[in-house]
Amino acid sequence: MSRGSKIFWPTFGFVILALAILAIAVISPAVDIFLPISLPPFFPRIPSVPLNETVIRIPMTVPRPGGVQHIVLEATLYRPSGPGPFPLVVLSHGTSRDPQQRLGGRLRYNAQSWEFVSLGFAVVIPMRRGYGRSEGDYAEGEGLCANSHFYEAGLESARDLRATVDYVSALPGIDRERLVLAGHSSGGFGSLVLASQGLPGMRGVISFGGGRGSTEVLNCSPDKLIKACGLAGLTTRVPTLWIYAENDSFFPPLLARKMSAAFHQAGGQVEFVMLPPFNQEGHYLFTDVRGLHRWTPAVNRFLNGLGFPGSMP
Image (cartoon, rainbow, N blue to C red; front, side):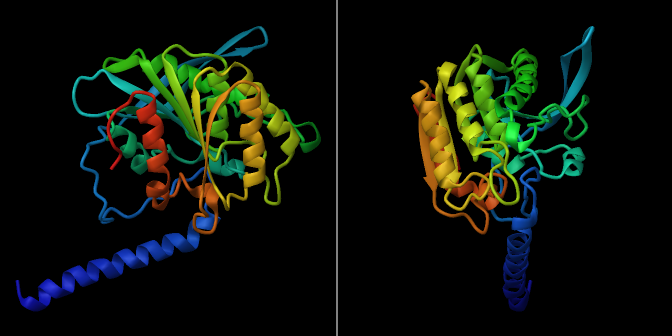
């Protein structure tokens, strides 16, 4: 290779990378919380741990007047190499403000999941009812603002997450006694609600920008959301980590602190982390891969404290 070629290719690579990151920065605020943002394959942070991705179908029964409905949920499962048994992270997605976007493809969160797989976790990402290609009707309606029922919506999320735990924890190579619930936005809130019901083997919960009821202008009914967090805290008996960014317009700092305070005052264990502003919209801290280095230190410390050794990359 000539000297000119040796200079050209690294320079060209950095130019392409810079353009890609600039493009993502432009579109990031317009991307809904339901859609993860992924960097192109030539991004220099290359995973050193294989994800061993598989697509699974999770059986679930839903009560109906006069009987039950049998459906299946589509989910992505990542696991480290080897026989295990591996601890399990159940990672739950958020909810799009646009109902049509809920019908998109399977969410993979591959970069985010890699952080957990690198610590030795298996990670499962279920598409709840009404999302992606999972069967069943959307069941997480919150009602009108004046009469919002956030906790009840969280119970429906929790129903899907429990079905996921029951199925995946019985698979070969999964340690049913070492379970962590994690989720973004409505998925974080649903994880907290499931934790409030008690779950064998559950060690802790991580909520990234958790909550429900956000609108384009403000939260639909903040007092009812705070009350719902208090209800979840009444019976949750495992440590929880709540992570927000200062410029999260979906759940601003004052509201987020009141939510966590209600959970704690009701008896729940809370570690609350407020991170500096992230890009133009802090609610995308988890779904945007550029936020990885922001939240991994807090998550790593939390998991170490639960008895899971190791360091995230």
